[in-house]
Image 1 (cartoon, helix red, strand yellow):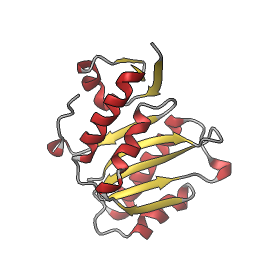
Image 2 (cartoon, rainbow, N blue to C red):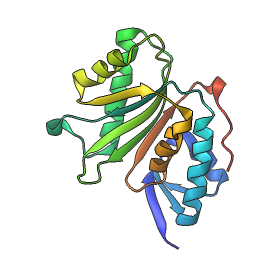
Image 3 (tube, rainbow, N blue to C red):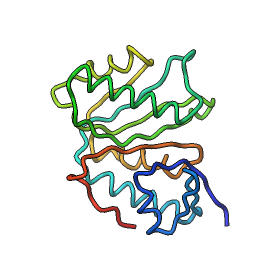
Length: 174
């Protein structure tokens, strides 16, 4: 069987065990027939949350990361800046790191919650001041951003992360 690889977060490892997916040292190994099933299940799960914003962040060309883990750390610094600058302590996100198709440089996509009262401009400037270009827009469930993000979870050379309030958590069913 053909196997596909992608980096996985610790957040859903218990669900992977239930689904009998092997996670070795942070690398998710699943066969291609299970890939679509996992992706659809995760997309349905992500869609249960009431996301507010869709975010894409890219880096200045001379400061771009080729490492997905460093890109994820940069995103967490961005969240830290939002928390510090605007006193937003309950920011939730589903983050996916992607490599550009024509280079090894990474950028990030995220669904966000917990930023009510902030303008798109304030959020965008927070990213831009430190990293580069961004796009911030309202989340529209019917556009399928949940599916767009979850494809990176099962894609080669991806990384992702999730931070949600556990009291709002939904069960992930495969």
